Length: 253
Length: 215
Image (cartoon, rainbow over all chains, first blue to last red; front, side):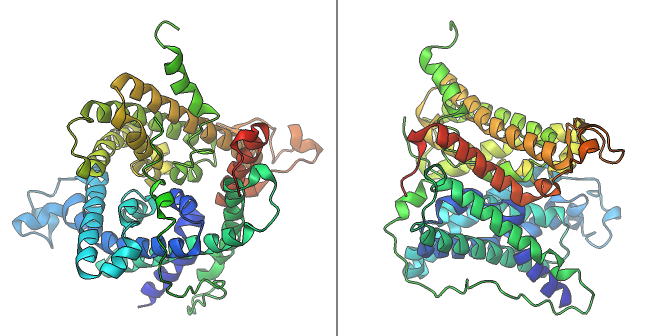
């Protein structure tokens, strides 16, 4: 239980996808002009990460790792007896992970559209974008390289990294909405100031670094996650065509 | 310019400055920032992206008429993933230390938005040779920013370039350190990458007013 709690807070604050690893920066910068769209994309990222990280964990455990194929001839417990013991398919992980992600995103899109049109309307536009969000693939690759042990922890890791990303994008969107009224030097307007603010926010998040290392009497308190309890808003999709450009950048030829 | 017509040269040169993928198009920032604490990984990353984007653009361009548009994203991802696996395996074989250092970020070239962006915006509508030039040009523009950021972060953060102590020895107080210079340890931390890129954008847009965004 304790490891779950620790992983949860660590993934949100200490190893925040955006501030510690710069993952998903493209959509982070492109879709953070309004809080409402940011909430939509953030929710979609949480959702997809929660689904794909555990799935890829199973792929990693049962297909990709060295000796993982041992279950094929019934030697799951004693891989060294299996004739598949020497098979190491981990070089295939990129292609398998990204295929899983792309398929899952497509599948999720179809299912959501069928069963919950209102959710689809709020998330739908963001879902295709997510297949190429670095944070999603990054989640799976970190899961693999950190050798997360159980499927439960993988699920936890996916979910909490998603929340970390959500917090980051909603926070920057809120700041950008306000900064529109400030007198920013002209060349810094838009992109430049967003970079610098993100840098400052990252410095702020670094102060969470000591959160989990101070003594072992646990109970890490996530103080001050600064007003990002965002009410579930009803989406506004007007400005969504600008989001689509994040990936499918404008066809200017 | 026997080999390259004027238009072709533009394809290569434009992304280096006025249409830079990182500072203007805002693509490919994901993997760009995390690995720029030192110069060497930045260069390796730049070269990898040049390889992947150059070849990938040609492949997609050759297949552009037979890819059904509904599944094109998956086709593109598979093409990139294959190329990235090649890069990853080559690095593991010949530069193991470096590939450990770059860790997941080589894999993340797959989801680098520059690559998908150029496939979508260029390779799907143009012939192989022009696509190749466009790919190389954009990857070069990406690499230039990476190298600039890596240069400053390594120089100011650790006082070295490629691991060579160019500013003198900080322990024995030689060179610049003799007159009281100190390394700025902050530069090697992740947040400074963002701020350095922010400053590059600032400088670039001050010099070229046409690039300034509306508020």
